[in-house]
Length: 213
Image (cartoon, rainbow, N blue to C red; front, side):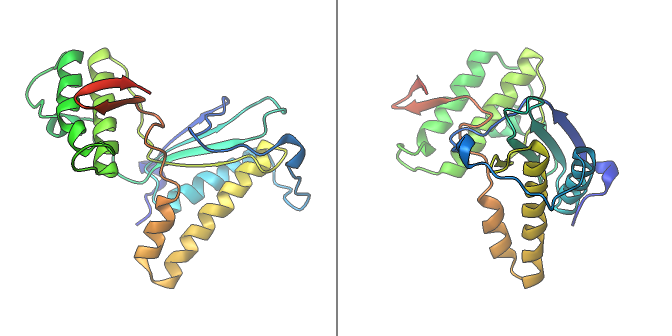
């Protein structure tokens, strides 16, 4: 069920936050779209509404004010935020841990499910990496909103057009629901799950040691 407007946290940044590992469109290959005439402010308004209808709980619209960088990336979450889930996930319940305790708890759990570990599980590894970062943020006094999805487009030569394209993608995803196939829809959403290193520490655990990525 889509969240109501009052339940959704919307943020915006005039600094483009492009997802790790996603390729860029060559400058000479970027297109225009004359039939898309809505203003930037209107596009953002409709995009936020589309995110709400898609079940987003927190969103971050990023694009550059520099016309030479027309790309746009929308980060969002579709789950309720649990700022303290890291306590149970890392076994640090009932205490304010040190950074060293956080890292040791993470390493002891992550080495088993690391892609190169004995029982690889990329989803669990991703979740542990997120929990580690959230725990470190809490201890150091930093706070962030976790966005597990990102849609980024730079196919067009204006930020306004790329944001419009993202809005259309979200609308199209919602239309999959009309087919009555939740599995198909979930697989479509997973295509926009951020990469394992996006927004979390780029360290990997191999053979019990932490290796910088």
